[in-house]
Amino acid sequence: MAVAKVVKYDGSPDIYAWKYPDTELGTWTQLIVNESQEAILFKGGQALDWFGPGRHTLETANIPLLSKLVNLPFKGKSPFTAEVWFVNKVNTLDVKWGTPTPIQLQDPKYNVFIPVRAHGQFGIRITDAKKFLKKLVGTLHTFTAKDMIRYFRGAYLTEVKDGISEYLIMKKISALEINAYISEISESLKGSIVPTFDDYGIELVNFYVNDISVPEDDSAVIKLKDALAKKAEMDIIGYSYTQERSFDTLEGAATNPGSTSASVMGAGLGLGMGVGLGNNVGGAFGDIGKNINTKETKECPHCRERINTEYRFCPSCGKDTSASKNTIKCSKCGTSNNVGIKFCGNCGNTLIKLCSKCGEKVEDKQRFCTNCGNVLIKKCSSCGFELNDNLRYCPDCGRKVNGDDNE
Image (cartoon, rainbow, N blue to C red; front, top):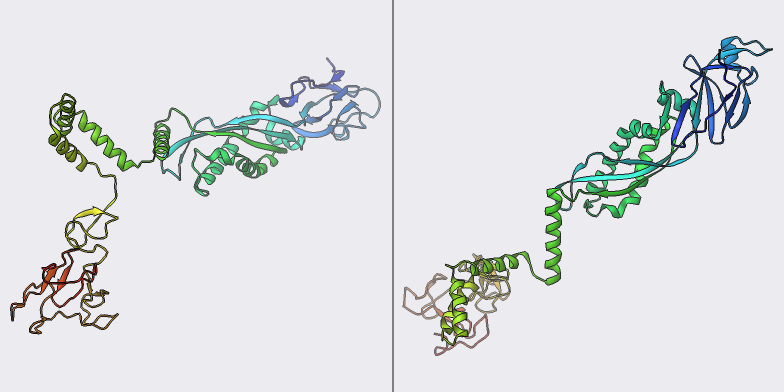
């Protein structure tokens, strides 16, 4: 019978638990436990006695639970069988972790689905060797850092996905900007993962997210980054997407042999050769200019023509675009009143149109009195505003009304 005289372990620090290969021991065996280690004696799958750092001679005095189980005599040297486990309780701070496949998340800022990867490292320390061996190691002979990652991958990956999703969705942060919040995310993830490790007698010393990234070759990421680069270029140069499309239209027309721009190019060449084609050039550029609109427009409420937003008066019909069709201006003070009101709310003037010659009631659009033939509507020669026949001054521009200038 081979009897072990010295039992110890001087292995790698990335091994958290190691079982001594020989189970035949004796009460004369020397058990050496290094600093940051703890040794536990098992019999029949049951943890009985454990030893801290130092040199221990196995005898009935220091293995009371085991001696009761195997009925060791109190005198002499007696052999017995038992398993000796060494547990490494040193702080391990470089356990690497990472997402094996990208996490598909919707970017809350740009509303596109993009894949997200994350990786980092965490540190652990085994605080309860007995719980650690019974609940986690089981029938293994060793338990390494790789086993630790494999056993806890499901737990930390779930928390990582939930934590990153919370920052993206709840805090409205783009996946392209989330690296600015890595420190906060790391602290949050550590707090959520700690209870899982505690259940196995392990203290989670720290949990770090080193980087959150998106694959550069993903089609959605490529399109998003191209769009952001284009937007940055527009902001720097100082033009909008609408203007760029107008420029693209002009460039496309210039490359089309049958387009109007072809005549422009020909006209330009003609001018360079001394041919007088000024009118052709002007007309051609005018046609192209119609296709380019770099200003915002609005619709005139009176004639429905599209005009620039900065115009108050429509260049097509001459009417005030700020005045609605549902209002009517007082002929005396110019105040806008809702259609259907008989008297001006500002000056009390009647809003019912009467013929200035015979006093007959007439319609707003009526140009001649049906009773006496009097002219009812004239246009201001200065601004084109339609005038009642009894006005002395134009309520729109203030010009004096007279028969010569405002017919």
